[in-house]
Image 1 (cartoon, rainbow, N blue to C red):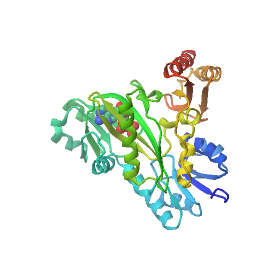
Image 2: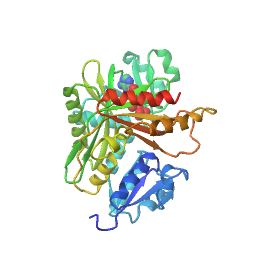
Image 3: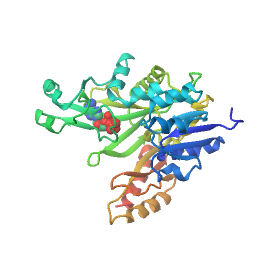
Image 4: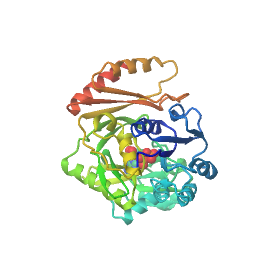
Length: 374
Ligand code: ADP
């Protein structure tokens, strides 16, 4: 198949798309990208960059006509347009059905329940006024069904007094999980049904910014929990009838249960480390999956820590130079600078993967880099 010209369309032109383009070059693929931001990361990496809204039916149809395969790097895309394109012979991976399910947190939950994948118990709340009927569920976690990202559509409701500030859009009211660890597992599946799964990674959050602080690969959890997490991720990919990759975010509860929180059927932050720490990166794996080629080995040949680089405050831009210097002076640390323009303070603008022979070695090198940036 690779001996022909293959044109792949990517909906979304952020850093995940940028890293996908880099890996697509190794397979001689043409990558086309649709994004409404002319300054999107991908704009400078492909001459097939098309300005347009990934949620707009006509923009997606016009973009997709004549392409061989379409994939996504974000979920906010027009699935009707993708269904139309599929009818015209364009392969769409992941399928529009999968994308529709994950676009809505309530549908995701229902889907997982149907397939006996453990999730936190939750109900649909059509609007803020309805919350009053569910006082008995407090404390609870309220999540906007649609359009939440980086924790922006999630709030904890402790008492009735919190209802006043609640989102007034359709939400899921979810049982509060007593979380010991947040973990993620990426799994790939091709059309033939071959499956390859990465080891679980562990996300550690910065409470203040509600952003990922660092990520450990592999997660520091027991072999039993790691096996459970992998099994759940594989079960999820099969239930979705996935072609592509899916990041399955999970909680390990203080009661020792592994529960699925949410799904992202695309390259994901929790696979950043796979570029330098695993035999096959998640980006190459996605390309192999959607091309129906043999999937790659997911073995991690190094332990790793991933740290995000956040846009500093005005007047503290010197931090960036210090970060680059510290990262590039550290053995087996790998800088990824997304080249974003006009980012707001606290937004992710890059990341560094720091490899080591042990997690503690990788953590201490990562901490050294961070010290240099204060
Ligand atoms: P987003 O899609 O914005 O990333 P998530 O569903 O991942 O939203 O939730 C963001 C964070 O909120 C999670 O990483 C977790 O820390 C917390 N959270 C989500 N659901 C629950 C829950 N049921 N109980 C406790 N904390 C939760």
